[in-house]
Image (cartoon, rainbow, N blue to C red; front, top):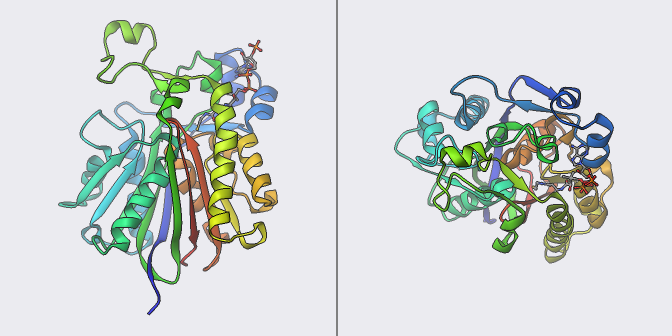
Length: 328
Ligand code: COA
């Protein structure tokens, strides 16, 4: 019998209705459409509106659609992992809240915080449990309400991020599924991308709020420098160690942070733009959600056995790649 592998057997996503365009951002900060498009590739992003709405609402919507689409009962799920940096609360885990909202009870559920690489970290973790036979049906959610931690008077960050969620079902399959994964981090890089206040080092206070220290802090130049090399390096590394050439790969599924970072990764892999999933122009950087949202948008174009390379870079720093064969 051939080896059982953990495979993605369904994908869904949720994107809020509100579209924040570059034109609207021009009214908030000193920026322009030409600058944003040429430096990042982003034209618009989605924003979750509504008092009391959080990351779990988007995650739960994606999970409900996933259960329905894959004819799966909530009672069949035995693990749910949510990758996010914008959890509803510091605790409990947003995964717990999503489970409650969709009726998944008495299962293992927890969050993973690896910023923009969160989905790859969570998928790799779920896959390990499924391949070991510990759990049969796992759901991995990548969801972020980045608008909750963005300063809309800071032109260097507010143009980049958006809100969204994606969810995949992970089950064991013969022949197809996840074949390899590489996960890396370098905590020294935290100085270039972090949230200063709201954690145990600097708990939220009137002063931290007045000074805007709960917003994303980013040194864009340094993040770009690391991202552009690390994401290409890790994509090349996973191809090399699996004996893959550009012509073997059907799709690159990159984290959507900046079009220039994605282009550099594709060039290194020797993949034409037609084989790169890119929707950054519509959604911006939705952090943990970008990769499952891409899989959902391209699902109909995927064929059983297609070789996909998923690659990411994000805060931490964290970065990684997953090589999988599409299972349906
Ligand atoms: N509109 C207009 N001008 C802007 C601007 C905006 N939205 N944001 C910054 N600028 C200005 C800067 O103030 C700077 O002006 P100055 O030269 O007078 O100081 C100029 O544009 C160049 O800024 P710089 O930071 O060098 O631009 P850049 O080419 O590096 O692009 C980013 C900025 C943020 C797009 C880019 O650094 C980037 O994408 N970094 C990585 C971000 C990322 O991926 N983060 C998530 C990690 S997963």
